[in-house]
Length: 514
Ligand code: HEM
Image (tube, rainbow, N blue to C red):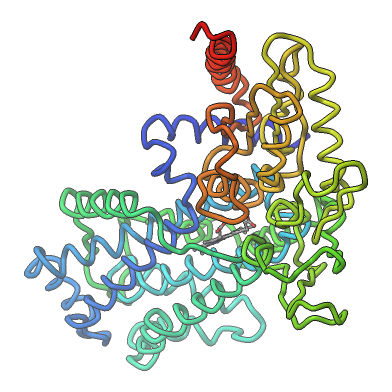
């Protein structure tokens, strides 16, 4: 399998970052929101720089020099923040992309987020290029000539662009066009593309945790003070720029022009873009059957609508004449088949029917709530040993079957969020001494919110809540990726010890010796 070693490498990196940053502030769990935060830094610093910047061929370089040297303590710092936040955003976006590949979150129903993500990367790179152009120093001259060569290779320009840079022919009009693109045209297109990018997701958070945002800002500020951004000598179209400090995050394509014809560079970039865009179909994945609504058991409460991570559920007026006002429908295009809706439906209550089939308002054909209940009952009945621990685990984290032993047995779910809290209560009633629920690593749910919702439900912060009568000491939540077997075994062993003590205390109490 291609992704396994990649995923392993990524999980190892994540674990390493967890040690340094903790799970809450681990930047690898917040790459999308961190990219948004960096945009805010770029935007605010950009607006500030726009005030002293002179948008003309004659005035641009001098005004940037004034910003950098005369105003180093204010505008100069803003310039460096603008530069370093722009570099950082390339890192966070590339890591975000790598993470989606490593965890297989780019194909199947997610194709839309993937395909709309790729142009964002190009948009950012081209905004960076026009930004460097605006300084109108020798680096800008190098970019301008390189860009003109690339444009002229396209049949629409056929030589017209390079003429702009032959000595004396570059006009302020052209410079203003670049300024317009950098300040307005490209950012507006990027905002639209970003909106499109997250359109199919619900509850999208665009702000990273405050501590992470502060830490990132302080790091950028420190870098700006230690190594302020500077310019090259002013552009001079009658000479060839000599030594240039290339920003490899944005300008990596230009040095290639020295070795390759322009057409080859176009073939490379468009080919790579096309290949990346097609990735969801080149390594396809079949999603499971989608959620199915059973109006006979749906009262239209809308909890599943609130919980769905992919905006696949809509609430509409009742169509079956039942006494309720609303019903829910599932959009098959958007459904990720995660089952979180089945876990959120109040009708998914194993205590509702004693012998017959358990029907619920919204269910997954591949693992209906009734089957989850049967599996729970049968798995507990098959256990042997003094302490019986039932583990509910999701398919995308650690394979919990690896934890099975005489006294520990597992039930695999599509996502931990598909577990109705009442099923945990049911398991304890059926004779389990303890129940462990383990989804993906905390903050890193394959289906975005499964492990967060289950935690909130257990803590009484999200409906349907784990009822007060469920003994919390006998319930444990864990998050484990495929590579986290040691960690979960340790937690399981602690849990076993805790359950043994609880059982001993309960026995003593019933013997009257406690
Ligand atoms: C321009 C910068 C980008 C920003 C600011 C950004 C931001 C985001 C955000 C905030 C999310 C929602 C995450 C969540 O709430 O779970 C997201 C999802 C996603 N992004 Fe990006 N993204 C960017 C570029 C990209 C690129 C270049 C790709 C790869 C081609 C990509 C692929 C994805 C995918 C596949 C998802 C869906 C994840 C899921 O369904 O769990 N993004 N992005």
